[in-house]
Length: 333
Image (tube, rainbow, N blue to C red; front, side):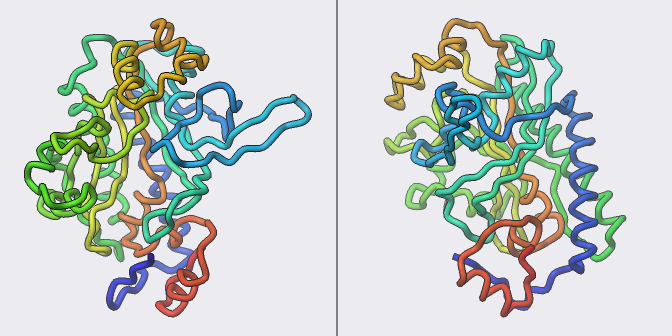
């Protein structure tokens, strides 16, 4: 369902839009690498179907699959690189405190498209090696603050380069748990709680996503085999153009053998224990890590104050969306 803000007009021409997208992506990834001590690496577009490396997301999304006759394998286009990155850190000999980032491109065929969602996903995926002592809520919060500094600094430089832009981003992060949100807004849905809270706290990190709350339901779905549900969260900012919250990043400290065992049981996914990646985790053969993804198009549309994600990325849209955007003078790339 598309929403067109009243009297909305793009801040930049199509040509300037392309310049701004390039400026944001180059500037932000430099800032992110500095804040988190990351090195850029190349990453796959698809992985072997039987590797267990694809991200299951909420568990119901169907990956795009195809066969490669030349190598005799069936493969899946990635949903994200949450698991691949951890294996890469081991293979590439990264050390504690050092990490990687990469451009992640995915196809999520079952995504419900709207102003913020597309079947094409582009994000910076990042992952870094940590040790046992760093698997704490304090270290998670410190990392979140570093990401927010990278976002804030990029936005401030962008506004100097493109004076027509006026997005304000707060660098003061409010940390809240999913249970605290449920206690505050017991009659609202998960997304409604996020909107209500982030409207008052425009830079929010929502923690502990995946496990069941006191109501017996989780705040939102989260795969059991990458984030530790006690040490993860979403970075959510307020979007003035749309008058709603916008999730920019899903991240967390990754599962160790103990938390993976617990979460596989809770999610009813014990069959995954036999997959190669999961066997390595359960046998403590992979480094302890933390990581996440940061939406490239979402960051661009927030800073550039666009109303639709199709203004900053190329994708496929339904006829109603195309017609509504055309009528409102919104050019979909």
